[in-house]
Length: 405
Ligand code: OVM
Image (cartoon, rainbow, N blue to C red; front, side, top):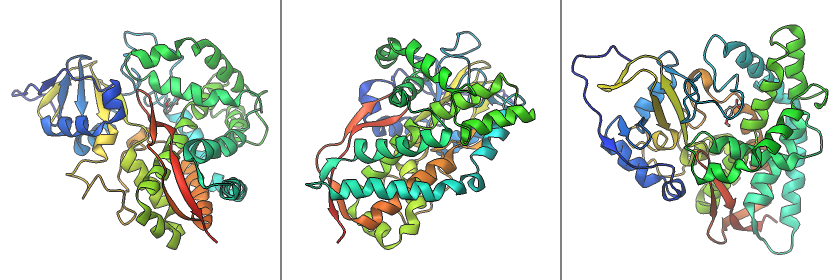
C-alpha cells in the first residue's frame, strides 16, 4: 500500500448490511454490486471499508504490515472492545508474536507429518462410503452422512481428543465463526451456550486430556522443547479445535454440492480420480466456505486512492474475490479443467490456512472412495443452508446416487 496521496478520493458509500439473512443466504448479488461499485466501498452501517475485488483482497491479505490482525479478524476492534475469548495466538496475532505458534503448527500439519494418516483415513473413507452405498434406497442427506460425518470420524482422533463431548465441536466452531460478525441474532442465538462450550473446549486443550500420539501431544512436545511457552500450548490446541472442524465439514459439503449440481464434472473425477485435490480447491474457490475476514489499518493506508484511516477495519470478501471476473474466466462455473490455485478461500500471506493440507487429505480420501463406488450423483431436493456470519454453511444436502456395479 502507498503513502497517503494529496488527492485521496472518498470511496463510494453504502448502507447495506452484508450480515442479513438475505445476503448470507445468497451472497452473489451483493458481491457483484460491491465489486462494481469500486475497489473500496465504505459500509456506513459498520463504518468499515469493504474490499470485494480480487486484486485488493489479495493485496490486503499479503500486507500484514499495513493491515494487522492483532485487533481481531472480525468486526470487533480489540483496541476498544474486549474479545469474547482470549485472542487466538495465530489468527489474531501479528509478527513477531505470531511467528512461534505459526512455525510449530506449520510443522505439525505439514504434508510429511500427515503421511502416517493417509492409510487409516483411506480405510475410514472406504468404510463410510460402503455403508452409504449399501443402504436401502439411494437418497440421503449428504451433509450429515458424508460432509459432517467424515471429518468428525478422522480429525478429533488425529488431534488426540477424548471420546466424550465431541458433539460440542460443531456448535463451538459455529459460535466462533458467528463471533467475527456483528452482534446480530445469529450471535445472540449462541449466547446461552457460550460458557458451556468454551469451558468444554478449554478443558480439551490441557496436556492431560490429549492422547499421546496426536497433533495435540505434538503441540505440548513443542512446549517441552521450549518452542512454545506452557501458557501458549493450550491456546494453539484451541486453534485446531476452532478452525479445524466446521471449515472442513462445510468445505466438503461445498464439494459434494458442486458435484451433485454438475454431474458431468463427477464423470470427469470418476475417470481421473487424481483430480480429487484440484476438485476440492475448485469447490473452495467456487463456494468459499469462509466468506469474509477483517483486518485493521495499522496506519492511514491508501487503497486504490481511498484512505483507510488508522485503526479502522477493512472487510475482505473472500467469496467475492474468488468469483471476480477480472481474475477468473467464467467465475461462476465449477470446472475441474481450470487451475484454481491463487484462490483466496484459504486466505493468502502469513495467515493463510495452516491446516489446508489436513483439509485436502480429508477431501482426497473421501472423494477417491466415493469416485470408486458411486457412478452418478445428483440433487434429490433443495439443499438447505445454515446461516452463519462468516461460514457459507449447510443444514441439508439431499442427494440421490447410483452405486457403481
Ligand atoms: C483460531 C482460528 C484460526 C482460523 C480461523 C478461526 C474461528 C479460528 O486460531 O482460533 O476461525
